[in-house]
Length: 196
Length: 48
Image 1: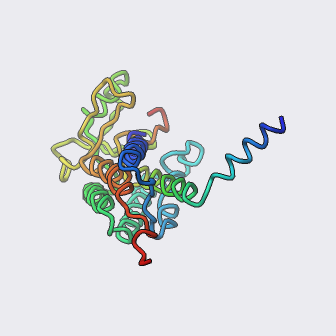
Image 2: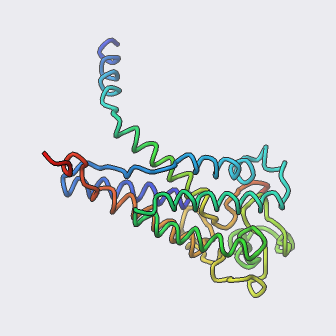
């Protein structure tokens, strides 16, 4: 949800900038958008829909997560002309790196999980397990490869959605915001570019 | 009632290719960040 919020913020900022510079707001044309659908649909089944999530083991979940991220990286590659996608792609690579190095799921320290859900008994956080049907795996911070790239950044308590983010997530948020807020309004009208 | 229908017809007529494109791009980006990002405990299934 926090990531989708960046889209809304970027879009609204872009609309305001368009209004200020008196140019119509134009989103960039994206290439190979079908890759996103192919990549994300299995993730929805495994991580988001309670009914189907139980059908898949943790092994399947990690395999699908890695393959899905690779497909998304392909989509980013086809759209790399846009600066926002380069920033987003870097975030995706950082997330993918820490996921691959730690067995296929995003590491989360038990201390961070406890901070997210203080009402849950600490005994629930079993090292090596996947909490709920999330993309996370519980690992001790000191046992995590590239731990600084894991979900270790806690949002402030006053934020409506209490979540732990990774540096890669922050770059993804920044990339999407840049794409919609900065690049879209500045994109010249194709009719203005064509001669005559 | 008739004028209300006419009003909504006019509004629908103003939805052009650019609006549809904007919607599709925002939808694609939403799916992209949901798939690419991995915020801690994002699944929300199974009690978390």
